[in-house]
Length: 118
Length: 113
Image 1: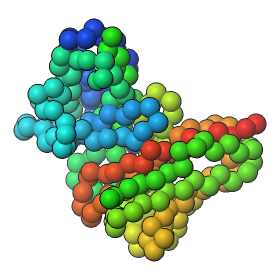
Image 2 (image 1 turned 30 degrees about the vertical axis):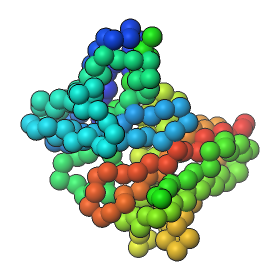
Image 3 (image 1 turned 180 degrees about the horizontal axis):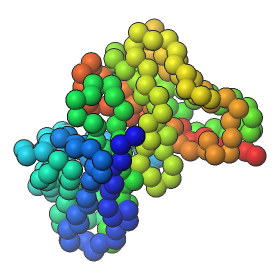
């Protein structure tokens, strides 16, 4: 199956700083990528849909000024957590789908990024 | 309200037995339902898809059923192995054509040697 690579896998940052997380599709061009966050023992919550060459679409309740998404190329989407606070500590995961496939086709997930804000 | 429920309690079974995990949903009429495996600190990995007009799907030791009347999907692992220990997530597409799947909280399975 397709490979989605996410980097870094773990990051610790100080409160008030910004952190960038990268999501790359390694063997296919992903026109759309999705960003999720997952708290311990909770489900994946969709934060936003990242569209190559256009603005991301954010889910209700997600602050777009805090979680900046850039999808500058067909293989790279980035999520920047700005002015991070301890409550932003979570597991962030990206996913992508092979373009042209039906909505029921499987999603390929990155390895996830464990963000800890101290 | 709309909900997807998976047993939040961990499921411990003996090696060689069949593990059965449940996914119940309310106030959805999903077009598709998927099952994923997630290991600690990793992203989910796709296992199986079942459509609303399908009753059962199989893949090697895995079997998924989909009962739209009961609003339930069951996920079975036969001849379970310790390597099957992981968290299993169900995810449904609330409407046909959407890429925005809704995920359950997952059930943690532990297969004891």
